[in-house]
Image 1 (cartoon, rainbow, N blue to C red):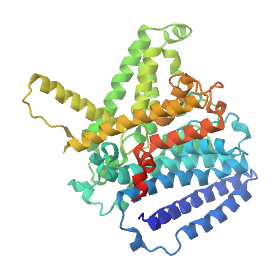
Image 2: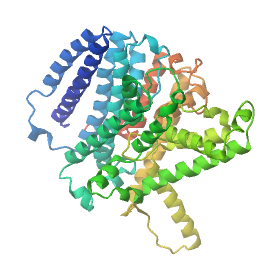
Image 3: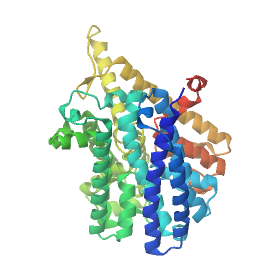
Image 4: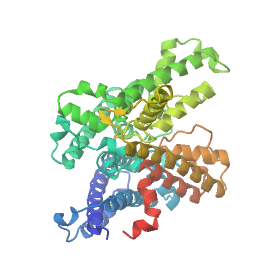
Length: 490
């Protein structure tokens, strides 16, 4: 039997968190007098009652005995419940349909950043704040899930990132709760630092808050249709915080607490991520330098190689972190540049960060495996092992990595076919799935609908795209395992 009391307890706690965020949104509505305060107040009352009912007569000792199926079920329900509850303001205030609200909130909570909104002027400021702060909630939520839950489920080779090890820094955390709290404090610190940086660079206070919430969560929601490049003074501060948010939070927290912050540069995942950013930006710069064509040529001849390199690097950080702000129109840079940027977008950032995608550590392990096999082809009797961050990569770990990669691309293929069956053009289906399953929010292969936006998709296609975002965000198997009949006979 499932531990349903644990499910209720987790959903109840989440309800209280959402109530707290909605109360802050209520204060924003009152401050700006946008006329929506009564809506938030009614929802706060209703959700508080729901939270009380969910946690009614539950003792802590009743929720301590957990098995993997309990974690699978609870993790999936938490994200679905969060989306369904948090989408209500879209329906009530903006008169969005269920499909539009589900898509927008799925994009927010999974930090994908795709949107169906075209007229930002008609959206009340409090709803824009709610849109950003729920994306911020999704960012910190996935860090906790990615650091504390997924490694224990062993999905996708995540056992390599279990917090139980012999490191002295990690022993200082008596329980997972302490690590989760430390990560949350660091996340808060990054958020306030980003707000201050944006404000210092000339943003209004509210814009600084809205952009910071979606920068640190690497979500990419913006409060207007204005491209990020239009905010010249905030360009590089934003890029820096995107990069920090794409690094593994647990590694940063543990090393800062252990007073050895420079040790983060010994982490193989971080080194590989930074190396890929530097080298891929170099190749993009070379490609742009030797293949200037069309309207870009006259303008780019005025720029130095250094400028081109930094512009390429900024776009790579933006896309690889899965933030997805409109930094530059890199589609004009040619097929090679778009392909390289798209590759980095699908890889994503580091495990234990707010980024989505395949994750750098899996790419690193595959690269180490290929190197091992090449060595064996020369010395067939070689008995080499793969060591990653001081841990031996076992066959079980490698199987986990390969399982996730196979499942990831199988899910992508089936999703493309499903969207194609709903009437979406094949190229648009491919573009939609790449954007949603990798949680990038950036289109690499063309428009996702005839209108060039998700707003042009049908209601069914939007709901399917929302679920694809969830699948990608939760490492696919976390939700797909619920489809097995054997799971429900547990």
